[in-house]
Each structure stands twice: as structure tokens, then as C-alpha cells.
Image 1 (cartoon, protein in one colour):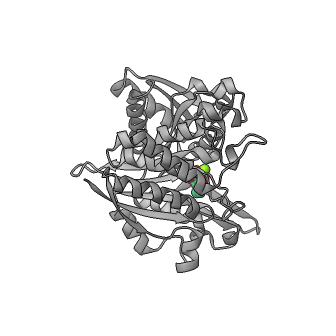
Image 2: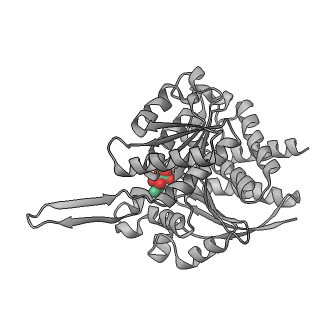
Amino acid sequence: MATFKLLLLPGDGIGPEISVEVEKLLAWLGKQGIASFEIERGLVGGCAYDAHGKAISEGDMALALAADAVLFGAVGGPKWDAVPYDVRPEAGLLRLRKDLGLFANLRPAICYPALADASSLKRDLVEGLDILIVRELTGGVYFGEPKEIVTLENGQQRAVDTQLYTTGEIERITRVAFELAKARRNKVSSAEKRNVMKSGVLWNRVVTRIGKEEYPDVELEHVLADNCAMQLVRWPKQYDVIVTDNLFGDILSDVAAMLTGSLGMLPSASLGAEDPTTGKRKALYEPVHGSAPDIAGKALANPIAMIGSVAMALRYSFGLGAAADLVEKAVANVLGQGIRTRDIADKGQNTVSTSEMGDALLREVQALAG
Ligand code: IPM
Ligand code: MG
């Protein structure tokens, strides 16, 4: 049985509660002999700031670099609103992405039939929806320099963020999107703002060239990012894979999340480049939702996005596609049985707690495994 090194970073808010449910699943996978996990635990975000005065310690960064995969909960909360900018909770996540070279962020948005009524869109628009947003994650305006607020001679302040992309950065994320599309419905939609931004012009050019030269059999379309946001709420099923930059991907994936019924449903994978000698990629898996401080500690959080993130780890980091399918099937079945946390419940419907949902998922995984 293969052994994998995992770093668990529950983080803040509901992160620790949903991580407990993930640990139950990992323990079961170990017991079944599907894979065994050496689990290290660390701190990230506000809790790391409280402990070390930084959003992630050097020790935990070293563990992340050594791990086969990092499982990340969520960071942030009002408690840390006033901490200095460079040690704010989100800085821990951004450092992990950057230092691990996790340039490819995969955000699938799947609408389970049982949840189609939880979406804010009409059932026929979202039922059976299955799209994948491929977001560039280590470049663009998140990391471009200069990034500063300077005080001018007249006493005014001027804030600068820099949107910056190189050919190579665009090429590698484009290839990830095309490769994934080939295993899906064979269509890539590239979203940028070439009508306003130079980075959009280059993005469009590079994606067009890679598509033509390397993936002539995959359909490619270009869409302006604002139009893409509109199309996502107008007729989302027109999309298969959407490839886009860091900031547009952040925004478009929140829109896509809501199509599925709840932000609590969306898992994500952040992957680095394949190591040419080991064939392995650095990887971090996290739910798309945030730390939800308003419901933290109340057993109301939905663990499905975090458990779905483990399924993605099984598939993309551990080569355990069948186990990933099992977990995803269990999610669909549990939803089909009408089991709901509060965020995905209809008015008047009974709801379960975080751990009851975790237990129901585990029971279903066990039943499916026979
Ligand atoms: C996300 C989040 C992060 C981002 C925050 C927490 C820094 O919104 O992963 O979508 O903006 O990338
Ligand atoms: Mg976001």
C-alpha cells in the first residue's frame, strides 16, 4: 500500500470543523488498505498569526514543501481585520501558492440534480451543470510588482497593483486547460479583457497559438471576462473548461459556485508543474468557500467542499481515481437521500450538523465500497 505525506492546515473559522470530517475519511481509506497517510498538522492564517506573528511559520512552510499534498481549510475572520497587511491571514495562503509554484487552480462546478433547487438560478439552467474553471494562480495582479500605496507631494495617496503576465505563464496554464478539456467535452473558453488590457491582448494571442499548434482538435472560443460573468448566469451549460487569469478566475469561480447551490459545495485543486524526474506535482487542495466566521463553532458548516477536495487529491496527487469516484458518488447519493446542511436546505427541510453530514458521507462511502 502506498504511503503519502499529507500536511493538514485547517486554518480559521469553520476550517477546523470541516477538517475533522476529512480526517475520518482519511482514517477509513487507511483502514481499508486503499492508501495510508502520514498526516502532519500545521497552522495557517489568523491562528498562525496568533501563535507566531506570521500567517504561516517557516516550519510549516517546510512541511508543505515536503508533503505529497497539502489539505487546506480556510483562513481569515474579523478578529484579524486590523493586523498588518503582510501578515494578514490570506498572506499565508498566497505564500503557499507562490512558494509551492501552484500555478494551476482547478475549480469544478457541478450541480447535483438533488440540489438544483438550492441554486439561485432556475432548475433547467443549472441541473446537470458540469463546468471546470482553470484559474492561473501564481501571477497577474495578485503578485505583480509594484504593489504599493505611496504618498504624493500634494498629500494624496496613490495605490498601484500590477497586472503582469509573461508568455510562459500563459502557455503553461493554457496547456493544463486543453489537456483537461480533452478528457471532458473538448471545449475551452478563454476569458480576458483584451479590449482594455495589454495583458488580455497577450493572453488571447498565446492561447490562440497554443490551441492552433498543439490542440487543433479541441474547440477554442474567446470571451471577454465581463461577458463570461454574464453568460455564466444566463446559460452556464454552454461552457466546458474556462481558462482565465488569477483575478478573473477568483471572481468567475465565485459566480460558478453559486450556480451549484452553495459556496459550501465547491472543492478545488492547486497544482504545480510536474517534476521531470519524479513525475510528481506539488499540490494543495482546498474548498473554494472561506472561513465563514459567522457560523464557526456552531456545527452548521457544510463539509462537502472539503471532502470533495480530498477526492481531488486522491485523483490528482495519489493516482487513486477509483477512490475519488467513490467519494464523489457518495456525495451525490447523500444529497439524493435528502441529507442537508443548512446552507443547501430548502425552507422547512430538516438539516444535519457538520459531523452528521461527515458521518453520512462516510457511511455511504463504506456502503459503496461494499
Ligand atoms: C480564493 C480566495 C482567495 C483569493 C483569498 C482568500 C486570498 O478568495 O481562493 O478564491 O482571492 O484567491
Ligand atoms: Mg475567491
